[in-house]
Length: 336
Image (cartoon, rainbow, N blue to C red; front, side, top):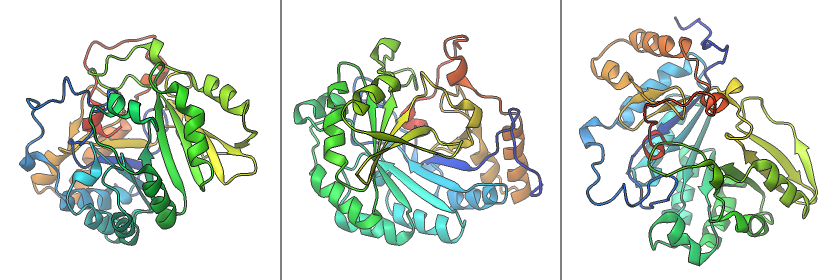
């Protein structure tokens, strides 16, 4: 089994696993965990149903044998999970994962936390940064939580060299801040990415009119800055441009207007141990059940192989041609 090449029905290899370590978050962003749905009455996943660190490490060690190169830790907010630095350390040392990254809203980052994560083996950290406008923060994240963005950016650059940011651009909400965000981040050694507002889950009231196409953003940015195209790996979700005479680059993730399904090499592992073969999947496959049944590594590998070899997902390419009636999984559960 471990000599098989893991390709799906569209000849896409498996190399990347996004792991949601918690379904909880201290923010209530409108496109992910809107407060009218994720309120005091919302039922989160019970502790005994959540994958332990040991189970995550074991699974990643198995999947390393068949091509797993990169792991991204997500949530919810991953820093709400206790001792996550220990998970990072063991993924690097015991599972031998080449690249380990994390996406966070940044509210729990401190200089000491960043130093701890870096020394544990974290290769990069991506900050979700949807606004710089203090009057817009509450509107976007649904709370009154603010933090010193300048201190966090400085600390990220100090410990990780490159500051990586993601901004989900929503028309009428934060599209007027694109150039302000670039002005703030571009003096740093940085990767500044803008993401088209996507129809993940069923609770964010998504509609096409809220999208700012990446091409429009490119036109806006290139009218102010000289951009030089950067060649990227074909499996990358973003197209990138270097900002001339800076150490900054601009990236666009265009899942709506320029789908990249054809080169998708990633699977997603939910907090309760379900494998999803697409961000827009309607259901997951319970690999935790196999792990907790004390089955052999070969059994676990066979289970995953069957999932991947039968994978044919390409939702972003057909979203406007073939709308499924089944509800899509929420972003806070699958980790984006």
